[in-house]
Figure 1 (cartoon, one colour):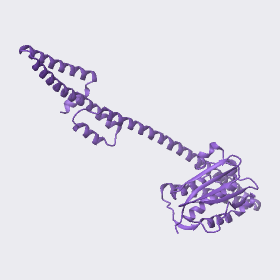
Figure 2 (cartoon, rainbow, N blue to C red):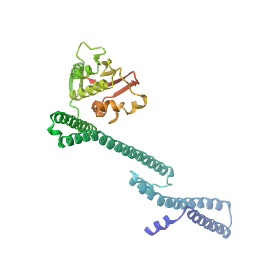
Figure 3 (cartoon, rainbow, N blue to C red):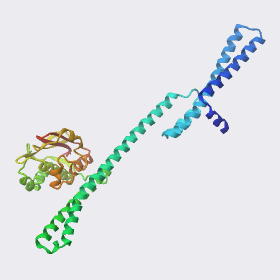
Figure 4 (tube, rainbow, N blue to C red):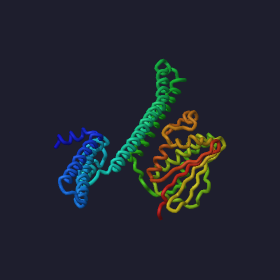
Length: 354
C-alpha cells in the first residue's frame, strides 16, 4: 500500500489523464467487441451505455480523488492548518469528490494569516527598535551628566566649595530623572501585562481635582497659568475607580498642560454626566498639537515639543501611562487639539451607584 501511494504521488496531471483515457478506451473497445460478437440490439446498447457510465464514473472518481488527495496532504502539512487532522479524516472518508474549493479557501486563509503575522512581526520589530532607541536616548543624557559631574569632582572640584555642592545637586537631579524613567517604564509594563490591577473604590472626582490643583499650584504660578473648573459641581460627584491611579492620570494631564501652556493661559476641568458614566474634560489654551502628531500622542517617549519637555524634565511616558490606566479601568480616553489654540483630553469613569 505505501508503494502504491508513492507511485501515485509521482504521477503528473498529464499522466493521470493519459492513464484514464487508456482505461476508458479499453472499456469502450471491449464493449464494441461484445456488441460485435452478439446480436446488436437497442436494449443492449442502452444497458451497455449505462454500465459504461457507472464504471467510468467510479474509475475516474477513484483515480482523481487518489491523485488529488496525495497532492493535498503535503499542502496541509506545509501550511500547518489547525484543523489538519479533521480535514485529512474528512478527505479520506468522505464518499464522492474532493471539494477543491475547500482546499483553495483553506490555503487562502493560511496565506492571509501569514501576511498578517509577517506585518505584526514587522510592527513589533519596529516598535522594539524605537523603544530601545528611545530608552537609550532618554537614559544617555542623565548618565553623561552624572559622569561629567563626578569626573569634575574627582579632578579637584570636590575641594572647591563653590563647585562641589552645585555639582552634587545636579548629580542628584540627573539620578532622580533616571529613577523617574525607570519607574514610569515599570508602571507601563505592569499595566500592559495586567500585573497592576486597579484597586477600585468610590471617591469624589471633584475633590480629586481640587487636590491635584493644589499640588501643582507652585508650577502653575511659575508659568502664570490659571487652574480652574469649567463649572464646579456644588455636590460631590462620586465615581468608581482606583483613586491613586486617577490622581496620577489627572496629575499627568495637568502637568502636561502646564508645560505646553502659554503664559497667562488657563487649564479648565469640567464634568459631564452620561447615565452610568462621568466624562472628565481637561482643556487648555496652550500651543496645541499638530494634526499629524495626534495619532501618536499616546506613544511612549513621543513629544510634541522635544526641546521644551526635555528642558523641564519630562520623560515622554506620561500620556502613555494615562492611556494604560484608563484602559485598565475599561474606559476610554480621547484627545482633540488645534495647533496654537489648545488641547482637550476627555476620559470616562464609571459612576458610583448610590
